[in-house]
Image (cartoon, rainbow over all chains, first blue to last red; front, side, top):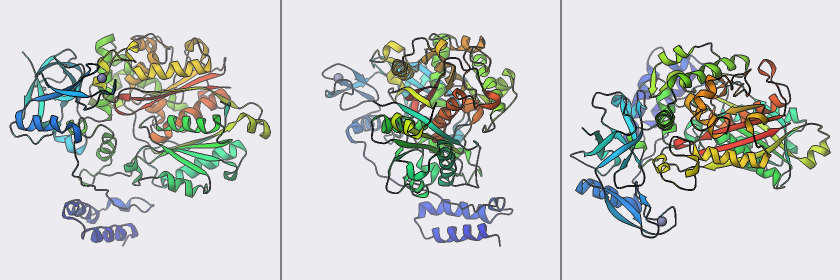
Length: 185
Length: 406
Ligand SMILES: [Zn+2]
C-alpha cells in the first residue's frame, strides 16, 4: 500500500477515539482517504490529513446587553458617551474617543446603506446562501454604520444611499444574525 | 535614528502550492540567498523578524519559533509580526526599527506563508478553507457570522468609491490587465497572463464589484531581506547599498462603518477613501523629504489585493487626486512605460499574494529595480527612489508605506 495512504488511515483510526463532534470530520476524511483513487497518491511528498478544532463557551462581557435586548425584546441597542456624546453602534461600554463611560440607548429601526457588496462565492458555511448582500447600515439615530445583511428581494446590487428597515428573526438566540434589513418602499 | 540599508535579498517563485517545501524550508531557502547576496553568514545576524500571517495556514501556533530553530538562529532575538495582508511590510518596519534604534547592526526579515495546506474534505478542494482561515480575521462577534470575507470586506470600500467618485469596473479591469501583463516579465510570478478588459468583465462574479480577474490569488512562497546599520555597511565595505529613506504606518478603524464620522482621519475622507493609507504616506514622505511623489518616485509597488484597491492606492499615495485614480490608469501613467510605473513585478494580482511574504517581496522588487537588476521588467531610474505600499486587515485597516533610495 502507498505509504501516504497507510499513514492517513492510521491517523484517522487514532482520531476516532476523540470527541464526538470531531468524529464527524474524521469519518468524512476517512471516507475520502479510502476512496479510489486517493488524493494522497498524486504527490511524491507525504501528504497527511489533519484538522484543528476548537470549541468555546465565550462571554460577551460588557456588550451582553445588546444581545440580551436583541434576543428577549427584539430591539437594537447602542451606547452614547456621557462625556463627548459619541454614539456607538455596535455598542461599547467605554468610549474609544475620550475614554469616558457610555449609556445604553435604543437604536431606530430605520437606516441608510453606507456601502454594500453582494457575494457570489463564500466559505462552506455560507455557500448555500449566495448571492447575499452585506452592507454597512447607519441607523437614523446613530453616528456609525454596522455591518449587516440586506434582503436582496430579487435584486443583485444594493446601492449606497438605499433606505432600509430592520427585521428580526422570530426565534432569536442572541447573535448578530438574529436580524437583517429590508429595502424600504 | 541611524540610517538603515538593504544589503541582501532572497525570493522564491510565488506559486499556488509548494508541496515540496514546508514553511521553514521555504524560509531557509530565502534566508540563504539573502545572506549570500549580503556576503555574510547566519552567524553574523544579530536578530530576526518573521512575517507570518496565519496560524491556521501554517497548521501551527507560533510558527516563527520553528523557523528560528531551523535557520540556526538560537541565541539571537526572534520576533514575529502578523498584520494580515500587510504582514511583510510591518515585519520590515520592525526590522528597520531594530537596526535604526541601534539594538542590532544586522537584522534579517523573512516573510513566508503556506496558504493552501488547508483543505476542505467535504468539497474536496482548498479554496473554501483558505477563505475561512482569512475570514476568521474579521470580528468574530459582529461581522464573521454575517458571511463577510476578504473579498467583500474590500469590495465594500470599492462600492463606496464607485458611488462617491464614479469609478468604473472597466477602470479597475485596466489594473488587472496591466498587472497580469507585467507578471510576464517576472520569473517569480504566479499569474502571468495576456488578458483584455473584456476578459476581466466576463470573469465570474466573486463579490460585487470584484470579478475573478479583479482578485489576487492565494500563494505560497517566501521573501527575505538583510538590513544593516550604516556603521556596519562601512565596515563591510559595501559601496552603494539601497537605503531606507522613510517608513510610515497607520491603522485606521477596524470597523469601516465608523469611518463615516469626522474624526482625526476625517480630513482624508470617509469609507470610500483609504484614510489610514493617506496618513501612512504623509509620514513616509515627510521622513524621506518627498514633496511631489509623482515626479520624485521612479516606481511604486501598490498593494493590489484587488484591482479597485490599486486605484484607491494611487489616490492615497498622492499620485492622483482623490477620485481621479480611475483616470490615472486610463491615462496610462502607471503602465510599465508610463510616467510612473506601478507594480512592474505584476503586483499581487500578477506576481501572487503569499501573505506574509508579499510585503517583503515588494521591498525585494524595489531594491532590484533601484540597483538595475530587474531584468526584462527594469524601469528607468532617474531619481533613485521607489515606494512600496502594503495593506491588510478588515476594511484595509493596516497600511505601511516604505520609501527606498539608491
Ligand atoms: Zn467619549
